[in-house]
Length: 603
Ligand code: ADP
Ligand code: MG
Image (cartoon, rainbow, N blue to C red):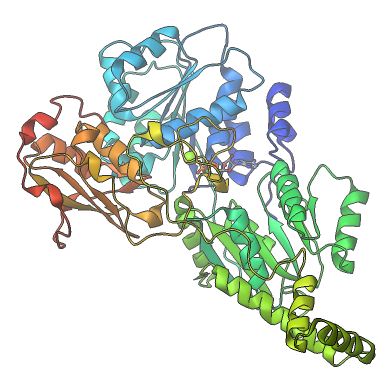
């Protein structure tokens, strides 16, 4: 394992926050947290270099929360993020970490949201503001945001802000913050301009870099599944079922809570599974490992720390259900399989936003990780049938079959049916409780897209797809992924097709980025000031999408759209060269200009 302290308690955090971390199931600090938290608590400025998924939010959020005076209803910390999605996500994380700090208030402000609402929220007061640079700038200009009491300033994903063209805005804001405050800058990379900003505005910053050590991983088959279209749990059971040579597995998750939840769910599905986490005392941990060795358990769901050093030769599979924080953790995790000269299998679940970590792991381990196609229902059924046949054949060769042959003959005679039918009835009996055909449906086609997030009510059996809803622990939980196998294309309901001249554009985000129609509508409506009812047909493909927009888009709107990102991916809006299939609305006329709001080109 990395040289990470085992405990948050070693980092100097208050009892209140330590209690919260236990409650939300964080067991150990991630490397960036372990290194940044003490430095920030000491009041130093800081440059943190680590990529997505390494736990940066808590790394800066926990120390800054220690400094907040809850009785003072004034902004005391400002966090700048490149996108509104991130602003919301970071604000939600802070709210979660503040669960034992009554009265603590965090406010996300971002472009596209109505000023009236934001003004109301700002005047009510907040301790922490999380915002996109453009909108923060606006509020500073309008004097609706006052930073006189600022203690901490965080630039989250600074390189992204640079890439999106916000660096001047960021500097503008930095110029206008009071001299006395702590500044933390986080970035996955350190381009020259970011370095320059850091030199100019940070005071003797400590630099913390999470490096990816290279390591070799021999004799292990490594594959990944990009989380999409299906709940992680369903995907997991499908994969485990058809994996060749499956004997036993260790499944890695991030939190203690998740170990228990997943163990319960797998047990309910008939697996011999148990949780292994830091809450178990040494004796209990040893018992779980013994059971895994002896075959009393087939699956252990563990956190990194709890699984440290496990050496159980029958572990044929390691599943990274939640992606590890760094390559070192990855290497340690997958080292739990392929032991004692056997071959091992490592399966990694990767959410769209974690693709970069996947590439880093590949680079660090110098071994490519191949994509895994999720087994279909038919694959699972075939596997079950072939296993079943195999079992029957084994019994055919067993002794003492005569007694049963007699019974079969009797039944056949008495019922006047063939032996084949009797065998079929017996087979049916034999599969009772463990059906050969997979229950439920194959992932359904994605539900009819709704472009207004207000009507994205979860339907029975589906998952909460409204990503703006406050949620305790976002990010790596599977259930927010859109569900359903991908239809070739998905369109907005035709009833909403606006009339008038429409132009079809192509954008570089699609289903593979985890994007839904409403994300695209939201981004365009907000960033180009086009009312959603004027946005035409949207077709989602795997890697790109097309969207119809009114002809005659003003230059500023189209500029705003060039910079727009959806789910962090630049959409690169451009006229679509592709064929115009079924653009039914091209004939009718309307005044295209009218559909563009004149102001609010906020990022
Ligand atoms: P980053 O900002 O580096 O991309 P996040 O701060 O968004 O990463 O964290 C990624 C995920 O990891 C989140 O779901 C978060 O709740 C979880 N997480 C962060 N720190 C811990 C920890 N110490 N233990 C368990 N889970 C954690
Ligand atoms: Mg982050």
